[in-house]
Length: 238
Image (cartoon, rainbow, N blue to C red; front, side):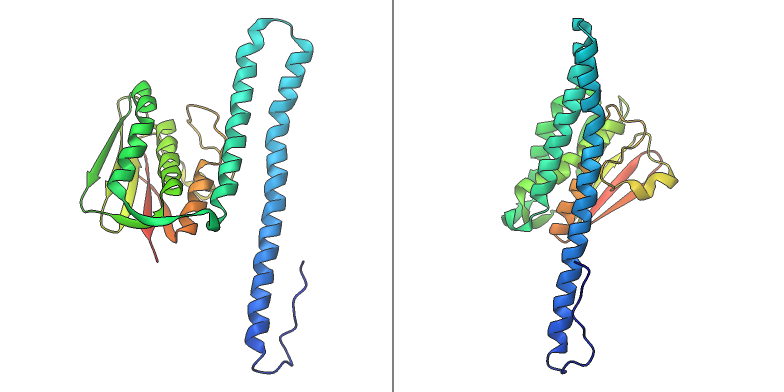
């Protein structure tokens, strides 16, 4: 998989074809290496909770362990669901692009997350400085925004707000939570990395999925530390 075509001593007319083919091979190798690393990390992440469940079932007979078992199962179920989601959003051919009104998309995601936000005492609000219309896959963008807001909910104290700002060429999701340290900032989009001060253990894949969707749509997704909280900025760079 690491072999490449030689580009020296070839006719000038053929050289561009050789270079292009080698670039394709570079992408294939990168994808292969990434998938190998990804599968290894998945196996590692799932091994521990599975071992715990097995040990608890074998050693315990009391019904008091049900809560712990359910917690482990819920954690694994969330991981599996997000792994499936990540695999789906990584395949660009699955997307159906159409003109989307960003305000309507935000309203749909707010409606979906409102019960969770209310239970946590967090307010969801929108600031629209200008109409924003994007050419995108609706389902994928719903997942992107939902994951950003779920991440914000995990770090937002009761009584605070999460604000989605819409402008003609960007969308910003801002929370007023505990934020993130400067040394951990570089890990924020890494698969399976989990930030501090979360309300649950999470699967550590939500922001990775956001990045995959953003790249597929040629959006930039940038992270900014605020005082207090953090914000994520989405821009169309096409």
